[in-house]
Amino acid sequence: MAFNPIPPLRPLHFHTLGMRLSLMPRWLTHLGLLGLFFVAVVDSSVIPLPLPGSTDLLLLWLVAHSGDPWLLAPCAIVGSILGGYTTWQIGRRGGEAALRRYVPRRFLGRAVGWVERHRILAVFLPALLPPPIPLLPFALASGALGVSRRRFLAVFGAARSLRYCFIAWLGVAYGRKVLRLFSVSLQRWSFPLLCVFVALLVGGGCFGIWKVRGLRKTDAAERLALLASAARAG
Image (cartoon, rainbow, N blue to C red):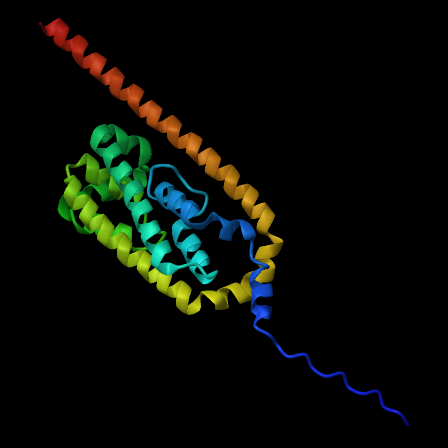
């Protein structure tokens, strides 16, 4: 009786990992430094993003996808500081009106109370901790309640540096295991996720611009009312 020879096993080459990684949604890896910077700015601003913690996820993804953590982490930190500063500035200029416009009622009282009692911790902890801890109410309240620019930038920058350096380390140490585990599923949903992300990002940008314009109109109306009352009194 003749037996068919067993075909030899093919050795597993290193390019197998590359083939698996190529299953990842390519649009994520193509965002690169500029995309990460843009997402970090928007993520810390008053413009809502479709997914909380988008900067953390994108940074983790890019580092795990052979990105340079020494470039990606500082890029995320600088972008987030810029976005946080714009939020602080809106709170400083808008005051109570900005808080009422951007902060939900369920967070407003606690955010104001925390900033009044713990000016450093109220900035540091929301900037350090991941979602669901909200950042926007505390950043706005710190500007509206008189936290100085220097103190806000120093505390916010320190918290973001710790957070994103830790995320980058996670990407180096464990990121590829996550990529191997979810590669097939993410590839299947890559295009729908891209469409939803872009649509919500554009919608969030328009929503943020609309709110900023509304805040400016409110400020202008209040100034005109003050001028009119002063003219009557004079």
